[in-house]
Length: 86
Image 1 (cartoon, rainbow, N blue to C red):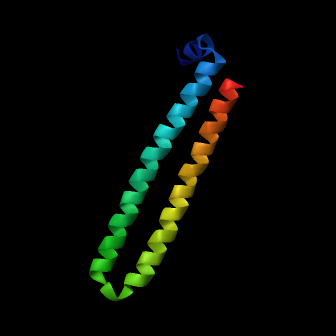
Image 2: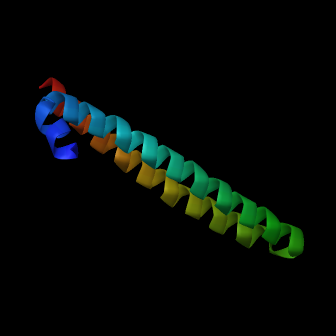
């Protein structure tokens, strides 16, 4: 069923759908990952206020890595759309 649907669609439609799905999934996963990281960092700071600096630094580094993965997905989606238009 799915192969018939994809074969019936044009290549442009498949690329556009892939770009949209890519950004939707990655944005949701990134937001969930960031919220879990922030939650754990707040819990850690609440338990050990003296480790505030180390926890905050590690949190920021982790959030940067998550955001980098989201930016890579955005670049791939942009390349798909450019391929779609070009």
